[in-house]
Amino acid sequence: MVASPGREGEDSMIPIRHVVCPTDFSTFSERSLRYAVLFAKWFGADLTVLFVLAGRRTPPDADSPWGSDTAMEPAARERLRARLEAFAAPARAAMLDVKTELIEGAVVATILAEARRIPDALVVLGTHGLGGFENLVLGSVTEKVLRMAPCPVLTVPREPERSAASAVPFGTVLCPVDFSASSQAALAAAAGLAATAGAALVAVHVLRELPETEAAGMVHFNVPEYRRLLEKEAADRLRDFVRTNASEAAADARILCGKPYRRILHLAHEIVADLIVMGVQGRSAADLLLFGSTAHHVVRAAPCPVLTVRGA
Image 1 (tube, rainbow, N blue to C red):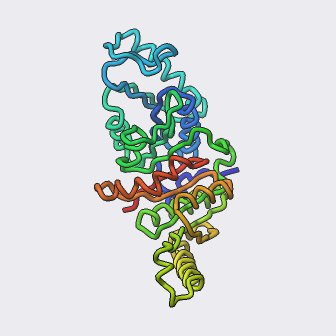
Image 2: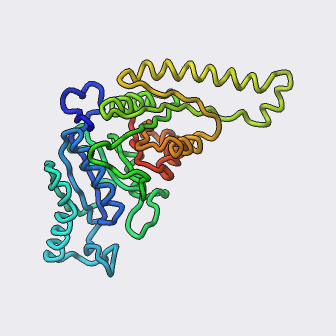
Image 3: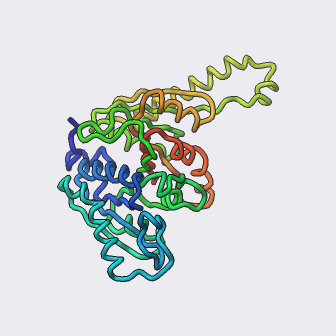
């Protein structure tokens, strides 16, 4: 069984007091709700299930999954409210403190406002939405929330290879490290989660392969030996990084070479990771461009949920 962090684990765990789970009533949202319930129970947090009515639209239904651009009548709003309550029923059955919110407004801004309403929030949402289309495209709700949220965000893929279980939510936690402040925060969070769950923690740093043009110009170097030297230096640095930031859990520290997101995803499949914890940068224009690379690709294609954590 997994112990709840409760108050005893607060020093080693990321603080979570409020879980926000936006929904569009799709099956993908149902998967997200299962993880939202799991985290809320695990941290003793309250849970808000949120549906945002984008503008004056009728509620989605089987004939019109995105609704229509007409003013909503009170009866239609009540039907939507009843549907939201039914959607949240599993969370209430889990004996959580559950609040449902039906709000009209801009989707991303409303989600972010709810995330800011109570300190130490976690947003849980899927990487897919109604119709099965991938949401992680430029301008999508999921990507904008990932880029702009001031709090951790848990993204749940379309079909997690390992479903959330009430007893053992995470058996293996994978944490990619690039030695930045954000990956420092991510590793500390991953270590706290792994220690509390009794899970295995794997920390990985990916060295980019030496470009062929650069390697070809180093004729006076023993290139394989040079690569081994780089790997050894990275391994030493990673061990120190893990020792400093992951004292709560023993970590399997690995050095890989190649395209970072590809090697991270390959390793996630190989070790059958239940959770990936990644650091993301701040919210400046330059940082948003950085997020669009490794973290973006991992979130899009991960075989398990991905928890993104911001550094100080």
